[in-house]
Length: 106
Image 1 (spheres, rainbow, N blue to C red):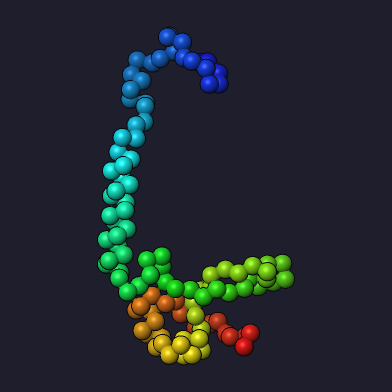
Image 2 (cartoon, rainbow, N blue to C red):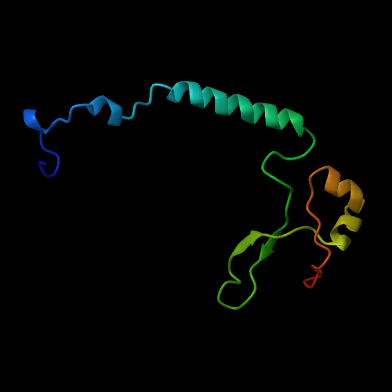
């Protein structure tokens, strides 16, 4: 077999080379199908966010990582109470709830 990006000589082709060639003629159709499925999913779970439950932004623990922020597991009960949202309602409308987390910074 020739090395690198050189032209194949005539005797290097195998008998059934068409079997090993991957074509992407279905790419536009797949793209359309994925888009339609995303729209259908968004309509099906309408009041909830499409990208999963709504999560709070929290600081990472430990001195090494505490300059970074990330998505937390869920909102605390005190935060939901301050926003006047019932815990059971929060779960149904797509808000994550974390029973273990405490509001330490307030």
